[in-house]
Image 1: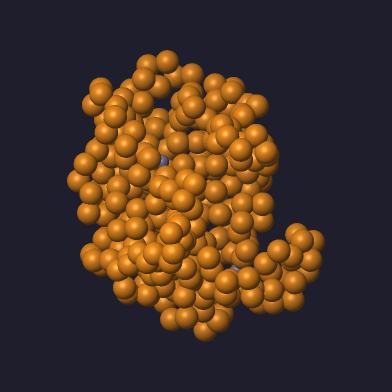
Image 2: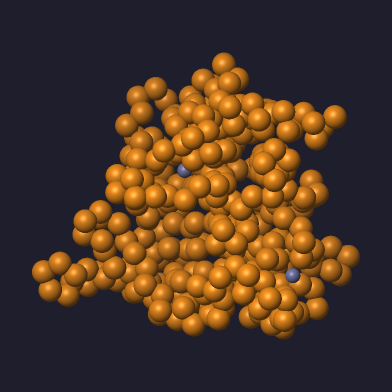
Length: 329
Ligand SMILES: [Zn+2]
Ligand SMILES: [Zn+2]
Ligand SMILES: [Zn+2]
C-alpha cells in the first residue's frame, strides 16, 4: 500500500511507493537496462499473456487481441477505500494511496509506438480510454483519472513495448485543480475554445487542424516542441466525447508524434490526458498535452517553477508543419 503525504510548503500531495524500488530496473543506468531487458521475454508481447495479471478488458479482432487492459503489477495506487486524511502531529498529514493503477497495451507489435498506429488502432486507443474513464467515473471513491503514455527511457518508460497507464485517484491532483481555476477565472467563455479560435486566426502556432481537433504549440510553451491537442467539440470529460470525434483526436495524436519523429528524431516524450474530475460539472474542456523530453529541468526551474524554453513555439510549429507536409508529399 502506498502512502500519500502532503507537502505543506506547496499544498500538493506526494506518493511514497516503497515497493516499486524493488524492481531491478529501477535506478539502473540505461546501458545496463538494455542488456537486462534483452535477457527477458517481453511481458506485453503476444504469447506472454500469462506473465501479466488477467486482463480487465480485451479488445479482439479475428481471434487476436488488439488492446489489453491489465492491472499494474507494481501499483502506485490500490484499494477501495475513500480518501481518509490523518494528522500525525502538528504538520504531518497523510492518507492511504487508494485507487486504481492499470496498464493498457495498445499494440501487439513490440516495436510500434503512437506515431505508427493505423487509423483503426488510433481510434481504438481513444475508445479504450473512453471506456476505462467511464468505468472509473462510476466508482464512488475515484475522483479523477490520469491517463499517460511514456515513450522512451528518458521519459520514464520501463518497458519498451508500447503501452499507456491509467491512474484512478481518490483525490483531484493540484495540476488539474490549477487548470480548473484558470477556466473559472477566464472571463471570455471557454478558455480552450477561445484559445483554438485565436490560434486559428493567426496560424502561427498551429501544427494542423481540422473540424474535429487542433494541434497547437501553445503560446506559453515551457519546453521545446511542447504540444497541446484540443478537441474542437467542447466537452468537459473525455468520456463525454462522441466516438467519431475521439477517433479523429486519436489520429491527430498519432500524426503529432509522427511529425515530432520526422522533425527531431525518435525523441522521448510524455503524453498526459487532462479531463475534468469525474463528478465536476464546472468549467473545463478536456485536452491532451505532449511533452517531448529534450531538456532537463535545472536549479532555476526547480527553484522558481518558471520554465526557460529555448525554442519559441512559433518556430516549433513551423518546423512540425514542414515535417508534416514532407510526410504527406
Ligand atoms: Zn513486447
Ligand atoms: Zn471549450
Ligand atoms: Zn492540461
